[in-house]
Image 1 (cartoon, each protein chain N blue to C red):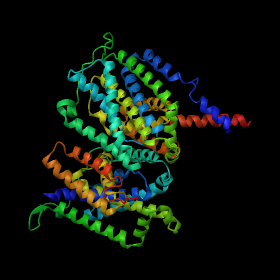
Image 2: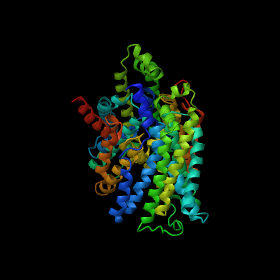
Image 3: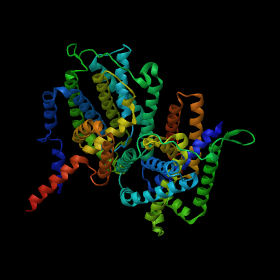
Image 4: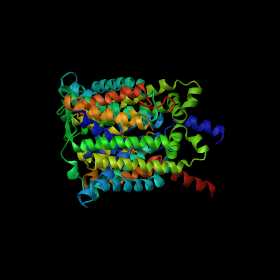
Length: 282
Length: 331
């Protein structure tokens, strides 16, 4: 029963983790993050459906393409706005989302793009205690692996230490001679790449059309705000929580589910403005 | 700028400038020049009023909110539900009740939300609005749910002037009068010491705390006033269209008003007029013919404004004027 919610939560996690790190690290309100997820989804789904690229290489392709594109954006535009007011960041990224949505509509078309899953991901799998859709199980496994990988990368590698240092105290980190600008670019590219991956993985049940960029943005933002900025574990648990809650509520209270999630978010943020797993001084 | 200059500019700030009557003359001229487009004109004036209410919190107090449509919707639903369920529908007093409801919502949410800043505040305003939208969607017994309330009975103004959906002359003049009154109030407010202290909070919150200004209280009062005006705009919308639906509470409306205010230039009252006219005229004609191109152009425009022209159309105007004058002074 919970597995469907867990799978949705994993996708939410994969998309949101990039947003959480970039917002936590750079203090940048990036409303275009859903746009990167949407673009990534398109790259992945179109290369599977139209070009016949196998699913797994397509995912890698989406990651790489969007990461590369986002480096261009980051260097050209975002870097100018790091010190700007929140309002300017909000406006710029809303503008960027509009441009992304309309470009995709012009080039690909406004209709929904269904993802054709390869045969080995369709059907059911026997887990011993229950049988469930293979794809959901694969999603859960992938999400857990990514979580583990990110956690290791964050806690155990040099660049992870640099990111953690920058999130906690940016000026001090700069003083130590760490090139923050380059770190930002890397993190931004990685975050957008993850968003692309999530966009592709989630296309099967979230759907994929140009409005995707705005439709799910609220959910990504809620997850990040609830989980705490720049906290990978926070985002992970918040995603699972929201994913499972949404799934369960839709099943039992089809009417008021969303209302409950919004109310919960408001209460949580009032109780802990820095998010469930955020630090008090952050 | 010497001290004397600074003092003089502070004292003379609130003086009426020669161009200030222009928008009002244009608004009256519109009534006679385009009798067939008064419906559009009414919508435009309501948008101006809504943008003005946002300008007070965003442009003067510096509160970045993504959920201002919440109050617009509260006003619209107050008027719509009271009229539809036969409780009360006299237009002017309905607007007053809408304003009070808006102010109450603004006060209640402001007291809680304005304790936070930055992203948390952004998220909280957004979630509050979405919460209200969901609530309006669910309570279809009272609110009409997804379909909204249509054919809301609005009696004639003062018992004489009929609200006709086909020939909205009454609506236009009525909305124009309400807009003018609200504008006078706002203009007085932002040039008062209270308005000055809001600007102070926007520019440097810490310093305002240090000089002993009651920052939280000022912000909450400002938010409440703004909510009341947004609710009046919503109430006018419900009355002039004779229906209410979920669009009054949507993120779309909140984002649009934010965009057009920034387009015109925020923190200067008249930016709301310029932005609303520019945005509404463009979207009215372009969006019908080339919806996708309109969105693309709008997006590019926003990116350019955020990167280069932070003060919108009026800001560009200002800097051109300053350059021309500056060169004259040089030569």
